[in-house]
Amino acid sequence: PSLYEGTPNVIGEAMASGLPVACGKVCDNHIYVKNGVNGVLFNPLEVDSIADGLQSLLEVSEDEYDSYCKQSRCLAEELFAPEKFFEKYESLILKQW
Image (cartoon, rainbow, N blue to C red; front, side, top):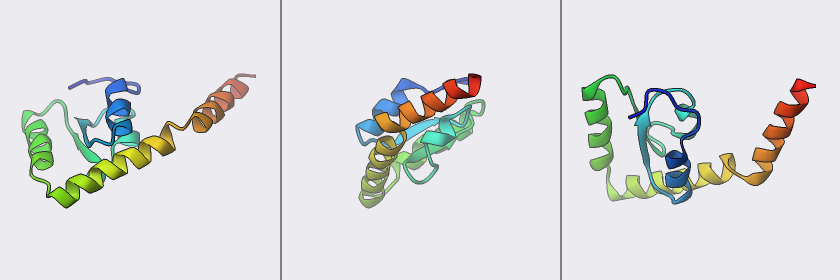
């Protein structure tokens, strides 16, 4: 797992595809992955934390898995909507002036 990330493409791609995500709890990952909602976050410096995170995803019930998938897709639609992107980008630019 990565120790430093901005917004990893793989997280956005998984979420847009309606898949649960397992990733390190670094940088902005917590914005996209909600532990126990659409995936798991783990400490990328601790092997046991990584293993436990992956194992917990493998052990979810079918209903929990379906919920994770739906939540990933919903969060992706909310966070990655073009309108949101342009709104935030415009805000960032306007702060510079």
